[in-house]
Every structure is written in C-alpha cells, then in structure tokens.
Amino acid sequence: MARKLLLFLVLFLTACGEKQYNEIVLMPSPVSVTSGAIDPFKGNTSRALSHNTLFYATDRAPATPEDASDFYANRRGQILRVGTAEVTMSPPITTLGELRELTLSSESKTKRTLSVTGVNEIGPLPIEPLNPLVQYPEAAVLAKTKADFRNQINQQLARSGGSDAYIYVHGYNVDFEYPTLAAKELHHYLGYRGAFISYNWPATPSRFAYLRDLETADATRRNLRSLIEFLSSETNVRRVHLIGYSAGSRLAFETAYQIALQHKAGHSPARLGQVVLVASDLDRGYFAEAVADGLLDAVDRFSLYLSGSDSALALSRFLFGRNRLGQVWESTPETAHIEEALARMEKRSLIDVTDAPGAATGNGHWYFRSSPWTSSDILLSLMHGQAPHKRGLERTVGPVWRFPANYPERLHQLYN
Image (tube, rainbow, N blue to C red; front, side, top):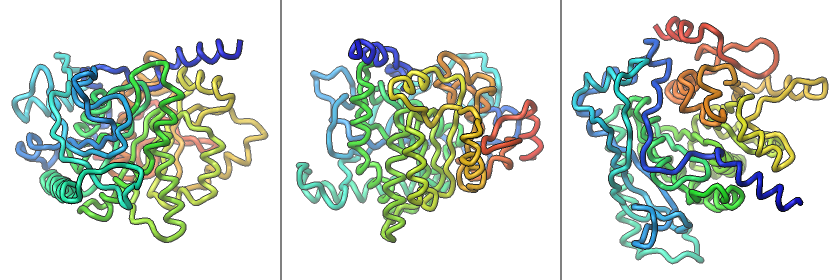
C-alpha cells in the first residue's frame, strides 16, 4: 500500500518543474514594465540589444545520435561545460521599436514563441581542484575554455552596461532546452543587462524522476559553486545573483549554504548578491538550520516567494510529511516567536504571491512566469536590490510581505 501511494504521488508531482519541449510562448510582461514604472531598455542602443548573449553552463552529457535531445542528453556528464545559446523568436522582431512595443505593452496582439535553435559550446570549464575521479580533457583545452569564457562574459558586461551576473537554476522534469528559454525571458525583461547564465543541471524530462532528480541536483552543487567562484574571481562581475525555481531552489540553496560556510571560515571568493527562491520544495527546518549557520551573512538579500495556491507543493508536503519552504503557513501561538524573529531579519524577505493576478494559473506552481506582479517584484529585486517596501510591497503584522491592491499605481509613484 505504501509503495502504491508513493508511486501515485510521484506520478502526480508532474508540475514540480517546467514541461519539456523546445518552444514556449513569451511570458506576459511584468507590471513594473507595463505600468511605466521602469523601462528595461532605457539607455540601450540597438546594437547592445541585438548583440546580447545568453550563456549556459551544464553538466549534462553531450547528446549523441541515440539521444532524443538535440544538444545535451538527459544524463549526468560530470564535467561542467559552458557556452552560448541561440534563441529565436517567432514571428521575429526586426526593429528596436517593435521590441519596445512588445515588451512595454500589457497586451500583445501577436503571440510570440521562443525556441532554442543552436548552441555554441565554449568548452569544459575547469573546476579547481580537479576531481581525481573524473577524466578531463588535456590542460590546454581547459585553459582555453577558461580564457574564452572569461573574455565573453566581460564583453557582454561591457556591451550591456551591466556589472552583475544572473544564474537561473531550473526545476525537475525538463530537458536542456526549456530552462534555457525561461532564462532568455528573464534576461529579456532585465533589458539584457549583465551576463545571464542558464544553469542546466541534468534533470530528467520524466514525471517519474522527481526523487531521482533531487539526488542529481545535490550531486551538482560543487559545479554550481565553482561557477559562482569563477565569475567572482576571474571576471569583471561585481555580484552574482541566483534564481532557483522549484526543485532547482534546493540546488541554489545548497550552493549558497556551502558558500556561507566557506565565508564563515574566511576563505570564499564568491560574491553572492540576491538569492531568490521561487516555489521552493525545500524543508523549512533545514533552511532554519542554515540561517543559524550564517547563511544570510554571505548574501546581500535572501528572498523567498510563497503561495497558498501551489498544489504541487501541497503534494510535495504530503510526500515528505513536512511543510515546504514555498508554502504559506498559518500563524499560530506556537509560531509567534518564529515570526517575530523572521521579521527582525533585515536580509531575509518572505513574499506571499497568493493574491497576485495570475498566481493561481494552472496548478499555481508557475507563478514567476504566469503572474505579471510576481515577475515584476522578482526583476525589481534583481535590478535594484531594494527592500520589499521600496518595491511597493506592504506588510501589516508578521514577517510576510504582500502585494497591495493598487500595486501597479504604487510602483508608478515609487519609480517616477
């Protein structure tokens, strides 16, 4: 009976990660953009917008003719490979005016789709010290990759006028292409500033793979941490921001936790800025232990997005028997002291998106793409690093921030 129940839950945890296919419809424009609060393309030239680069880093194995995937397989490859991805929009945008109209409008007359049409692998990035159990290419190949990747990151920073790097860490049940497209959307609404990297860990595009993928995510922590350290110490990047979604929030959290422990010991080169966890299926108690270990000391701000409409996390809670970090919790006398302590932590933000328009779309797990209010707040956090009240959110009693009913108008007042 227990095995049947477990199988049932794994089968129906299908939404804890994006669907796998090489095409998505461009997400709705964030309300921070459509309300006129910000213009992500302000100051950018046509050349800067047309020559933007989307990077990827993956420890998936390269695809072979036997694999269904075109670029990278759905299995572990051990070595971290970096490169750039070519993403095509259909129908295509040919002018800066069209791009601005598409982005700044709350309603688009034409449905636009994105697809990955090619990748340009720079090569295997050396993770130092090298793992003695992994077979690497010769030293000259590793050195060339390191130099070429450094140069391309710095060129993108200079072209875009940005100084930060952004890393998107996807959820489970996806192949290489889908999270690459989600990363492209986020980079687009950031105005293509800075260096954006889609971190494509080897998740499996299968609804049966939830528990297996959680283990795989843990196995790639060292590679993600080393990528952050490389960007911090080897390039012109000022800060590295992490965005972890669903099961990928575990990987982002674990990596930040490792960096925090190294930071505490006084030997971490990583410069973490904003760490954003969206729809996280992490255990709350584990997060609390990390805070006690100095997690918040190693970042500029830690933002947790919660929803009371997320049915995928409700199933995850049933599977593990404990509340998930991305769920809204009910205040009780027993939780009062916890809420008071959380409210005093300036570098930690809890944002409840339950009432945000579009947050309950589908099973309520995709809200960072489906809710223009939620995507707005995430992007403002990444752009400016401001506290929630400076981004138009409000808090009454307790540690949780929420969207006011007049959120678009409030944004316009704050940023104009």
